[in-house]
Length: 168
Image (cartoon, rainbow, N blue to C red; front, side, top):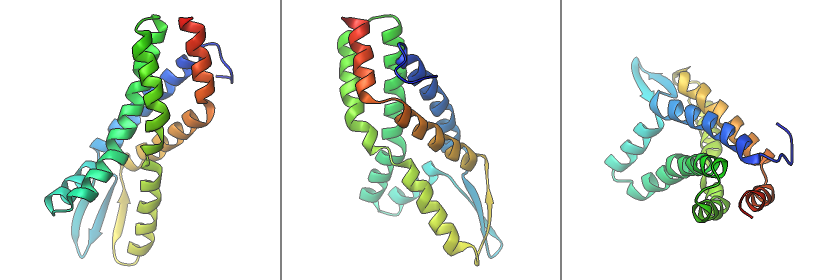
């Protein structure tokens, strides 16, 4: 994969499929298991959001749902759809709409900030609890790395240049 590729959406598509797989694993399985006073709790992203809604923190739960689940998911799915449509040179209007959406939605995916907040919380809990990292923690780390590589290696200007080559 090299910069200014003629097939930039192929690179984007590959990163997006990888991100989607890691994202699903990070959201389904527990991120960590916390044991405090002999009581064990599995922490998942979806479970955390559910608890916030259940305890009445609807606004906070909604914000976390948007920035941790919906925005990253919509960005990845948009890249995948764009990859399929440009490969077949179809639905020019849909591709253009999704590319405009991506320029705005990429900034709302803040799962990397969530990881930093987990690490800060762990520093405070380390003396009071036993913490065991689970498979979703590794998937979350890998997702953040792949997502950062995607955003760093694929510039919006390059996407628009490729769009023009494909459809014009």
